[in-house]
Amino acid sequence: MIDLDDIDHQLIRSLARDATQSASALGRRYGLSQPATWRRIRRLEEEGILRGRRLRLNAESLGFGVTVFLGIKLATKGRVSLEDFERAVAAIPEVQTVEHVLGLYDYRLRVVARDLPDFERVLRRRIMTLPGAGEVEANVLLSEERLPGPLGL
Amino acid sequence: MLDDMDRRLLRYWQAEPSLSPGELAERCGMTPGKAARRIAKMEDDGIVQGVSAVVNWAALGYAVEVSLRVTLDKTQSNAFDAFLAEARQVPEVIEVQTFLGRVDVRLSIIARDMAHYQQIYRSRILTLPHIADIEALMQVARIKSEQTLPI
Image (tube, rainbow over all chains, first blue to last red; front, side):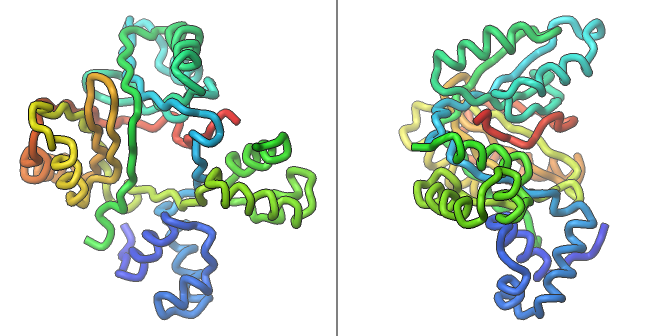
């Protein structure tokens, strides 16, 4: 693991909020030259600490009014190929994230839909028909917030 | 509202959020000026909220990620607010979501290792107010994480 100082932590925090900030603007804020800032960002990227970017869109204003988290248990463990399940579930456009988890469920999915009837369609036609899908639990997302995390501690 | 060109911009941008404005315009077959005007409009309308760098916590030494599903004691009228306010104070909590369903709140927690997780769980999580029940899902792997919308 590489050694990071306070400025590195500030840069990570700042870029997590807005990745489009230029190295010179960030440098001015933290008292660094543009090339020095650029080198620090490059290093964070090379170390895999900053892993790409994400475009944040307002799902609701694009017509996706419902986000549901699904916990899925595989019905016949051992007989279903996890790879087949994962490939099939990741290919569903409405499925935004797929996590393999340990605990009450085997997989955790984040699903978007236009409204509840649309969600029901996705659930019945695409999720329930997945190879090996067993018990499914659904929780409708009401609110979410991301926090900066333990940077600089 | 949005037309096909707007949607096209969002589709390309979402697939490759690191594209420069010029590159994005070129992919969509638009002049940079036209693309910039459409993007500015979508930002003003709150459709485009911004571009974030994705932080890889594992590369920062946080190898463990646990999803804690919490059911609250709803006989307490301020259970949600009191719980959320204190959960936000735990530095290792990186995400807070509230739900309609069997689960009330979900917290994403990161830790350096299992011993560190155990310590956070005992000293910072179990001490949060109004917890009726709590279940943990430990993340083994992320299969899909781009969180794109099917525009």
